[in-house]
Length: 254
Ligand code: MN
Image (cartoon, rainbow, N blue to C red):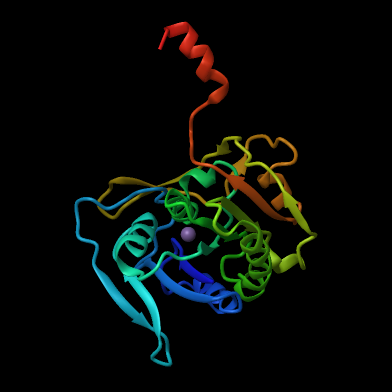
């Protein structure tokens, strides 16, 4: 099996390296990832600047892949259209530092990279690790857990072009309680910005981390992750609301 590995935290992020090591047990791994962090860029692509690409080598001199001065979706496009000599069997994106559940799935560069893989008809998996303390993320253990799950998904779904979103709970309270297959939560978060003043007296804002959902519908990725379970959510990228499609066709005669 040939796996294309990418992320949105950048090619030197520890989450990507940990997952790369573990995925080698499943097959050959080629990394094509952003040269710098691209968290929360969603499904952005680069049109107005060049996509500079540099080959990257491991400490032992073996080829690791390519660093791209672009977005996560750019990386997957370039990998599949230009850089890889063959179509990979699987696209994996992660491990992201921080969970991607609820509406954050829509902001996530990690998930967007996996969506891009699925656009090409390749089975694609996003992997994210929740954290309470950003300095203590156990990517090694998370990568081991992710590898087992990715192996199971790959065995069943390689070639199907399906899209999956995996989230691993914060590991500082002990191992996960188990696995839950759950839908994406869609509640809004309580948004917070910190207001500051710069040395020249201008007001600026920082978007604050640690957002709290305004309400929690039970049995979603948001609640199951908070309860300490690994979550898997099957995703699709067709945004059509099929329940309203026929009604609208009747009402407008389209
Ligand atoms: Mn990120």
